[in-house]
Image (tube, rainbow, N blue to C red; front, side, top):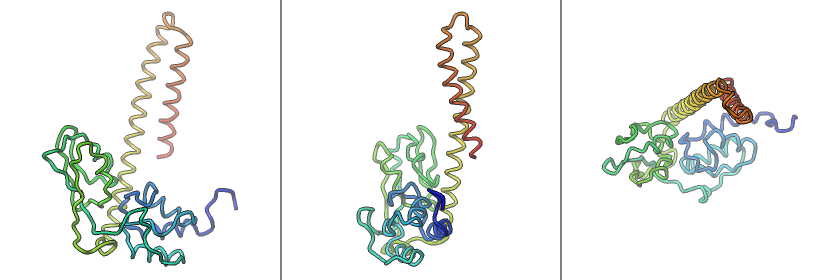
Length: 227
């Protein structure tokens, strides 16, 4: 087997493990998203006890798929509890947009310097918006009563959250690529202007600027080719 290649069946197992996760994309497992956690479990690099949103039932699902023993949730990654909803105190919101950028499923709407609000039905309770808020105007409010883990969540909600996260990633990648292209075009125009006045400009300085522009263009091309 090639060094660094996944073990036979690992991709299939990763898919199954990802399907068994609640897709809240909360990162409490220590990985950037549910997919990366599933892949780590499939490779045998991560335990099945790191997902508070899935709770005890989630661990049982992962144990059945991996053949591992059911164990308690690792408290280092949080505790199982009711599903919570992010609620923004509109009186204190300053419209900084940081919570919008932090939300992995794009369920916060608003604009710069305008009040933001959460689309309740789409919130996964990931809590990532809470530390992002500079004025502490976001609270996590329990909404599932005594139901916790998968009892407070559903397969349909997990599927929707997964789809919204995929769209979020595509949107962020597109915006980053378009921004890189705008900056590269602006830099190229500036360089062309400098070169048109080369008699008045230090050639070494032009070469340095050209290297910067070419690097920016290379990044833009790389992003475009990988999309």
